[in-house]
Length: 194
Length: 198
Image (cartoon, rainbow over all chains, first blue to last red; front, side):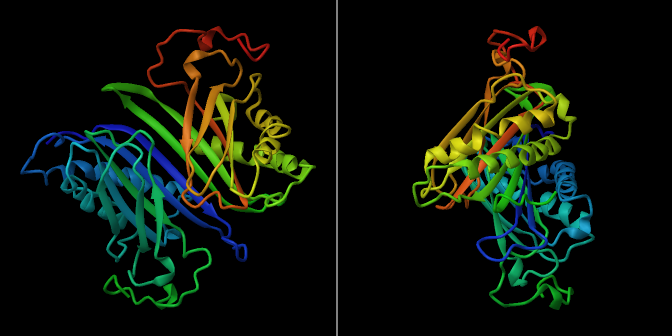
């Protein structure tokens, strides 16, 4: 299988103090790691693509590690996560799906076997496409306070023969979360849902 | 790092961009640029305010905070920064002059204090816009504005800012010029660094 060629990377961190309400004593932080890679399948229909998932594993781990580092280096601070991909115009949506396993399991591995499925979004788009990466609690998908999203993108990516890959981690609930539902303190942590 | 006290800060974002290849050519070491962006309440929104000194003071405070954050994102000694730039986007209830008050009178001095030098003018851009507006931060060499390899720009945006009564303020720093600079002009090894131009 072809190797992974990375053209550029972006690390973005948001620190949110308030959103019109009380200033949080511990600001919410969201971090995103983006990598723009060459799409080895661009320009033609290729039947066998699944092997590329293995090639992407080291990049997934590197990006997940960089997110934990960007949030201070202690994986225990991470409470939410998500992933996504934007495939350039000469590729197909299925190429973005190659990111589910290497992106998701890299984060779950580094977050002590996080139990919840990693929420995701993907699409085909041109340079400058913005992607709303969905975010949920790492151990229980139903935790309502942690439903969130982070918009990411790069002005010059993805080019037609590229894929933009994204991983996102957050340190807590929405800054003024108050719409009820399952609380993080009520997680059973058995099935990844509740 | 805590939020500053003078400005009412809603959020701070940092962006670190690294280019590893361009047109199939490896960029080694990669070119890297970082920006720090604060979203603050605009104390002068919604009315004409003659005296903008409050915004000038906020600019001074943000000059230091954003430069420290951007340099930290870049992960190099502050004295190794090669180029810089600044920009602001004012929400719809503010005026362009509010961006000028933040950027021009007092923001530059703390930027230079953090970097140890900075003989050149800090290139800037400003605009008024709505949520998610793209801010193109111009970049130029910090000690000699004519260094052609370092003329550049960095686009940043935050999807939920600036709200109508907010201002987005950005400082960007780099460890390098463009990835494959080859259009001549003054090079960085020719810098005299006396007048800020050459």
